Image (cartoon, rainbow, N blue to C red):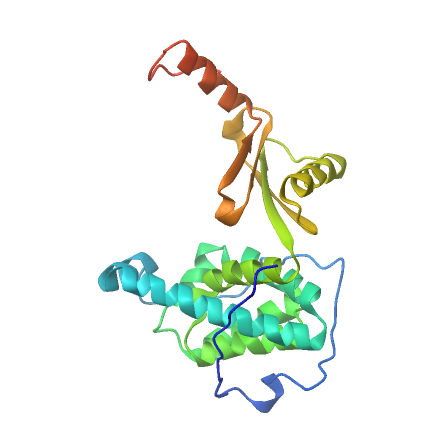
Length: 252
């Protein structure tokens, strides 16, 4: 298993004492909880600066700085989860955050530096309540508000996934298909990836993509570097290449 090198972070809390991580937090886990989209986000009166513009203004250094910060925050969250024995539950909470912050309106709200911290905390409270997040995850979100780093939540989510996979010897496989695959097919795919990689665990993420026509693709390996393409789209492209059809579009 790869050795995880972490940069220590020292947090200075400006949050109220109740928001800080307790020594023995009470974990409330709901296996049937679902993502709630009904967040009441205050309307923005100013146009938020896009993250891409911010990164361009600082060049590649700005992007690298954000990546480094995200990795440090993700490692810090994983450390707390390990010490509390809640790594799996925390990974589930992070998946909830991934869904929430994939909403452009949510991301824009938290990335806007002109939005008052109290308004961001109000929305954080909504997220914690509706998604039934653990106390230390709720506190973590408040820390990000304190440190003014809510603009990199999506980066932290990605970094946490890498940390989690390393700690648990888990191989992530992204399965893309036209229709939702049943659990039996996904289990077969997981076993196949496990044989190919030798990983102790395999974690499947599913994506729907109608452009594949039929079949599915599997991405795995470091940053999805390996691809198994079983889609009809790929087969049609191969046939077109063999027939030297060039840029001719096939009517499907």
